[in-house]
Each structure stands twice: as C-alpha cells, then as structure tokens.
Image (cartoon, rainbow, N blue to C red; front, side, top):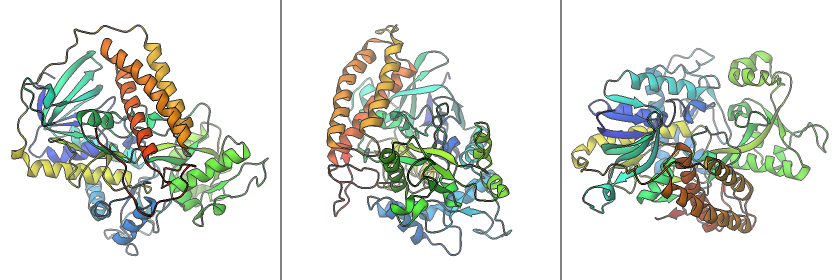
Length: 538
C-alpha cells in the first residue's frame, strides 16, 4: 500500500460497500477496507432473502405500507417509497452479476415470475427472493467476484478503522468538518496508516456485539457509528435495536440464526413439554398474525413466556412439513443442526431472542450523504428513515443495495465539487507504549455486553437505563486512560467504539418517553400520538 491516496475510500466490504465500489469503479480509483476477511461482515450471514415487489398480485404501495406498519410510523415515507421502488431493479442487477436466486417452482419466464418468492413476518405478500436459506452468502460471493475483477478497485483486508480524518487533522485547521478518509490499524504490520480520498463511504454495519447475545458477526462493534459521531455527525433512533425472535439456544453455539422464512413457510412457535400449555402454540394470544407478526412483537412474546414460566427457550417446530420440503427450503439450517443432533424434520428447535439489527445510526439523506462534507454512508450503519422503530424482514440487504448505489451516483454527479485532500498529519505512534493489561480490555468488553443485555434489552425501565448509564460513565474514564496512554490494538479500538455506541443507545432510550416498536419501557407503556425521531447532536 505504497500509494495511500485514492479517489474514494470505502470502509466495509459487505453488500453496501461493494455495491458502491462497483458503481464508482467505472472511472474512479476505489479503496475498500475490510476489518477482517472480505466476507466477514453481516451480509455473508444473512439467511432469509431480499424483499422486492416481483409478483403481479403485489404492489409498491403494499410493500410501503408493510414497512411503515412494522416501523410503527417512525419511518420516513419518502425514504420507504424510494427504496421500495428501486428494489426490483436492484434484484435484476444482482441476477446479472450471477446471484443464483431460487427459480419459480412453476417455471415462469417473465420478469417477476422466474424466481421463487417466500413470505416473512410483517409482509402481506410473498415478495422475498432468495438463494435457499443462505442468500447473503450468495450475494457476497457475487459482489466480491465483481469487485476483484475490476482493476479500479483495491480490496484490503485486516484493516481496523480508528477514526475519520477530518479538517482538524490537516496541517492547517479549516473547521468545516470535511472528511478526507480514515486512520486505520493494519493488523499485518501493527501500524496505523492514513488513507485519503476525496469522498469516504461508511459501510461498516451495525453494533450487534454491544449485546451479550447477538446474531451479528464478531466485528459488529458499531465502529462507523462511533467514528461518525466523534467526527461531528448526528445519529438518530439508537434506542431501536431489533431482537430477532429465533436464535438457536445452544450453550456452545451462541449466534446461529433461524431464519424468519421458516415461520413464513409454516413453522410454529410452541411451549416446550413439561410446563402449562406445553407442546401448544402461544403466539395467537399476543397477535392475530401469530408467527407472522413483526419481529418486535414476536420477540417480546417469547421473552414474556420465557420469564413467565422460567424457561431457557421455546420451540420452533416445522417438523409437520414433509421432509423433502424442509430439505429443499432450509438446507443450511438442516445441515448445521444435524451436527448438533437436532433433526428439524422430526423435532422442534430450541430458540431464544437475540440482538439482530441496529435500526438507528448515522443520519443520511436519499443520496447517502451525512452531515459532514465528503462523508457518505449506506447500510446498517445508517438511519435512513427506512426502518423506523422496527425493521421489516428482508429490507436490510435491500437498503444496502439501494443506498450503496445512491451514494455512488451522488459522488459521480458532484465529483468536481469534492476537493482533493490537503496535507494530513501522520498518526503519532511515538507517545504511547504497549499495555500489559490486555485482560482488562477483555473484561470491560464482557461487562458492557452483559449490562447492556440486562438493562437495555427487550424490556426496559428508567431505573435499568440509569444503571447502565452509570456503568458506562465509570468505564469511559478507564477506556479513555487506556486509549490515551497505550498503543492501539484491534481490541482496544473496538472496546472504545462499543462504549461510545452503548452510551448513544442509553441516551436515546432515556430520551424516548413512550413505547414504540423495538423500544418498550414499563415506565411509559403507551405510544404517543405522533412519531418523532430521537436525534442526538454532538
């Protein structure tokens, strides 16, 4: 990496980052940074599919309304309409890149008829295009292959972003907050590098690892949200953390997701044997939509039954379906669970809720622009207005595809307005030393995840939130001391970001004096008449 200056710097190598890179690389030199492996982010883990209106009996208006209902009215309708209208074209582009979406079982040949569509919770129609039960992996492979084949795209792994480079890092301070790239820790050399570009795109994903139980990959530590906040960008709705209702309950495997599509194809939630109502369904007591209610409702119902009956888990059962049907629709889940001696064709799956998606994030507009000149963002790192108070199933990859392209389009259209980076100060590595207390970093990481799970989880109260805030304030002093006096390491960088994001989540939760969507508090159980975003300003 002798040349540290590019046209555009993209932080993140999932669906959002690679979509932007492929669109920009027509005539721009693009650097894509991955914290670990190129496929180490959440895109590669996505099971269910991508929502798009592809069936003649469906409509954009239906998809918009389903999204608004799931989001409890907190969504921005203009954003929802924009994303929904772009969905079919985004699917077509992926197909052209070689994503092998499951074919329509009836052999349809026309657009919108050639792919098999499934239905998931909160959707009024079948509109989920998928690749078996491993759609994200197929999308990741196709986008990665396209990026690797493009000579204008440089892909670099094992780069841990530390902070955005802004005007205050220049040799002459300008004070306009312009973003020129990023300081990143190179895990191969153990040194920090300054990577510069005329535009920077955050595609770093969410903050799932803020919580003890999460379906997110190891690297989902809220890096982009924390960096943007420190640089001066607004964040919004950080209290809205989605808990997926059905994560495998297993003492050895802590983050294996059981896709929403299993309930869409007939899977039933039941109480386990040995308790009152054991072996029977319970969702109808909570919502007339049963297992197909939005995720916040299903997750709270499961949480309620677990606490009411003192359970460790509930059951998700699809064994009443034919064996051939199960193997065809859920081959990945079947293979993974059979290794754990669970045969889903014959027995139910033990499941619990787990943190799954960060619905809040960095505020962006329809062009993917943040508050800071030169800084764009796309995907789970953002609060675009699409998800509102609760993300509708399979709208996540869709958001990545649409806003990844939108950011690229805006950069193309306004390229001449983006000045070249000024002289930037190198990272000072001389003033700090190595720490011999790495165990403290690991201990603090675990403490954050535990108290966030206990106090800022599915059901909240003001007292629990204040307890979490108190612990964050104490830890912040310790982490600031470590960061100021010791050489940075990947673990310390992530711990700093986890703490920052935890603080934003708790601040946002304390500001919302109602229960709406994913934010449920026993102190304010009712929903206010008007939906308002929780916006934090640095």
